[in-house]
Length: 633
Image (cartoon, rainbow, N blue to C red):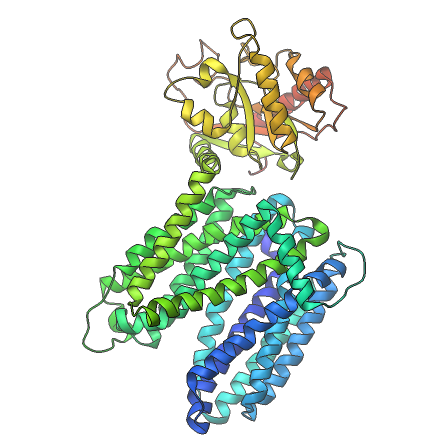
């Protein structure tokens, strides 16, 4: 359950630590910008644009200077101790900031903004690197979803609180700001004391070489294909987010004709959308890395963003929030902006999980540091993109929003065309959950990486879809060539990665070609699923395994995961009471249980042993299903 997850010591203290840190970050940044704009500029005659850009640069610069070092520290030190030290650094910085706010020392505040950026740059790598040490692989999506939700809600609350505190006048306002900064930071320090130990994942000395280290980390991160896709994909999300959030005040002023209250309301809609998207991602993923959500999220951003760009409100003077809330057009805008955020949540969470899983444990934090550096670069590109469209080309903010929606659409279509199998797999999972009350046990037995063979009993024609939808990793599977070549289903089987096989009697060399394709898949690190019985069971029991299984393992000795299905015998796709697919369906939402057993190491999986293991799992699954038990998927 979600509530239980948020109360467990292995996750809850870290969740509140990072959420409070993001809250304080944004409270401090926005308070500083408001004080500079409404106090320092009128008093000293400073240039507003120069100050705002200087503040943005001071916060971004540490991500280029210190992210690589932060990644090295997180890999070589206990992450628990590192988090606590960084939270103490934040507390010291906030005490100094409170003093600077009280005495209105604006130069010191700018210097402390650089310090806060440094603390954030050092904290970023450990933020995502610590999760795989405390959470199982099947929990990473949910953990990342809650971290994203906590971050965006904290950004929203910090921004709103900054506006409230900055509106207070005199000593009351300065005191409230000072006390808030210290108390929130102190709460973060206290929360960090509950984080469990997270031992270092790499050995060796830690050296500080900011420029050489940054270049090396970027080179290493972009060299590997899966990591490169994750890093660039996440940075594109921050590019879009920076563009939308930077232009939101001007868009509200020029298109919505609203005031500061409307900005806060729409910012809240966006943050709420991101949070709901992250939670929906966790729900749809069901503990798996579901990359099919990435193009879907990008398409949601694109369609919603283009529709948002087409919206406007006509007014002769600025409207108060109460007046806007009475307008259907404003609610449509809010909904569309929330959908942009929801698409962002669906898009980003799987990519963060991919980055964690694709990184080697001994340099995971450094790869996250590379992502932070790339994020900063893309946010600078976002600022440049806005300047070119709005200032150089002289186009409107609506045109800029059209461009952002179009870019998201292109990315979504490109990813979908490049990897349609991931979206098809997600569709299969949703279909299976609609058709059956599926419960699954032992998914953690599927290796997180590397090749593996899954062997399962064969009950019905739906078996492959059930396993493909429930397995935490994409599956390749063997199937009869006549079924594979069915005209109206062949496209589906090709996208799904099915491997057709036919008997040598009907197709000389057919078995050899199928075995070669299985061998290629295993050597590429994929998971292949086969039904060793070779046909549907005629009586509901596990039949003798054929020797094709021995041929596969003789070519490629890989870990074998036995599995068993219960609950599909008697369905219209099984052979009970007549040939499969020749009967009318009699059950809706049947209860189905899928159990994965402990993997048998490579080289120790003879056919008879696997047959006994599958039979044992099948008996246990039947008994469990009869008692209507089974852990949630």
